[in-house]
Length: 406
Image (spheres, rainbow, N blue to C red):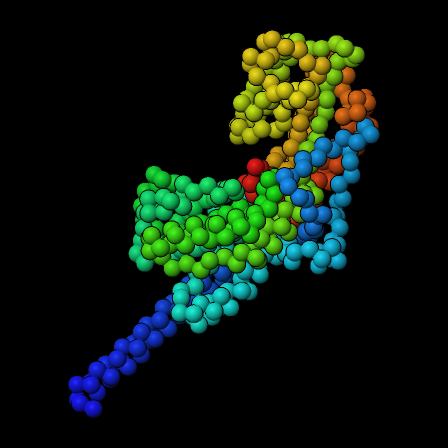
């Protein structure tokens, strides 16, 4: 063996050892950043009971709480059926998800180190902060993938991700340094970011995110990471799909709408122009949704709506040329802050409209609603509100609007 050959062998061994040491140092840095990101997860997490419901196939059913002149019961303490859970997909209540993610951190980092990749996982966000700030990622209800760019990047670098449409709401956030707050990214967001996260909503009224949809999200994140470039670890599609199913079952039990109907007797009808005048005098505004909405002046939030008793939507043209036997006041309980108070306001508005139009206030079976029946409905609104809060879904919060939208 010549001295040249021996020198090349020594140089090759030294190069391999150098690469191994570099990778080891990089993994130590990533693991340290991960632990710092999740340091306060356990202490920040709110606690509460959660419970599954029978899984729904297809689109989410939006129940109306009217039954035999009173409200259909909603359990104040939803049942926890362990046997049903075991027979279905693995169940994880949303409030347990965050601590489970934190406990998996060291395993994810170790697996990545063995594979020779850089581990990257979503930073935890306290649920209380999530409800106060719509700009934060929500690891309890979103599948989150973190991208760690090789160098700071602008929002334009992930334009393909921001413009993607996957069938569920998709958001992208960035922050300028690990301790900085997350910033919702748009195409015109200025500045550069050292960390990027993609957030896919796991469930809404269209149902749970499927494994195929989560796989598509993983591919999208991988493409974005390659173009940046950035290190990332794809989500576990099976586990995220199980989380989506569990979350969807919980929301199905709590997806409650209240309907109070103002109805003319017999064949009598209400002219559309007359109905519009009365509705607008009461503070309603006709919207593109085909309903009249009653909105809070200070926030612009919809408290309750007025829909046509017939299946046709309300439009300006239709109201000028048609009549209807009645209208339905609708309260979407999860999407309203302080649902019981909103119900009280809606009940008074419905009574006034019934009196003005010489109509009756009835349930969906056309039976009159007296004060006792209305009081029973209010109790069920309050029970639903309590149940939502027990699973850390504050009615009317950004989290509730996401889960009960779509």
